[in-house]
Length: 256
Image 1 (tube, rainbow, N blue to C red):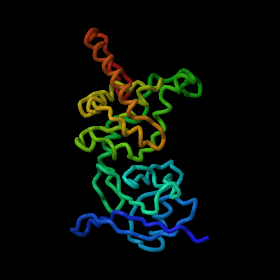
Image 2 (image 1 turned 120 degrees about the vertical axis):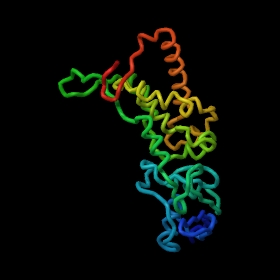
Image 3 (image 1 turned 60 degrees about the vertical axis):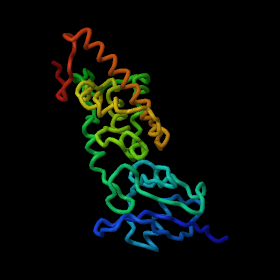
Image 4 (image 1 turned 30 degrees about the vertical axis):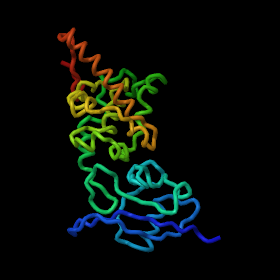
């Protein structure tokens, strides 16, 4: 049986030219088990070596192959052609500057990610001889769902607030901040507060929920943001009623 022919309509942008982005179509003979990434690689290998896009693992782990496929942001390595029509439109993620073809600039996202201190700010050294911090299953359960983010940026592509205000920290960064705030080994909540609990952080989110709908790893950043709003509100009233009892955690692990 002959291979199924699909038309891949890809947005092309060459920064060295002065022209606006345009769509270019390719006819691709595809195999039954192929995903959109395979079709793009076919174009790159056989039809047009100038086509530019990012990918790495082909296993929905690295997050680098996020694209807009038929108006939906998703990982191109998870978008099976058997589930898509014969005409497939592929575009770069929305709300980001296009660097070349399907590649977008990561600079703003990386700055937002760095701003929330996405790493453990540990408590006092553990007394355990091997230097590890023990956690119960219940403690792990509090943050594990939010630790599955692969930074594919699909959530930023559909976030209306990020599209309107690029100062907004965004769903993935705030979900990752919540992941560390909920970790029993961490004491960096106050150190992240200036970004997380600000007008460019959780309070900018209007809870549309599109970020959670498109997440390929079921992280649910919308829930993380709402949970952080509750915790921040509790902190506010605690500080209002007991200002002298507030302790601020520093990255070095000291409190003042």
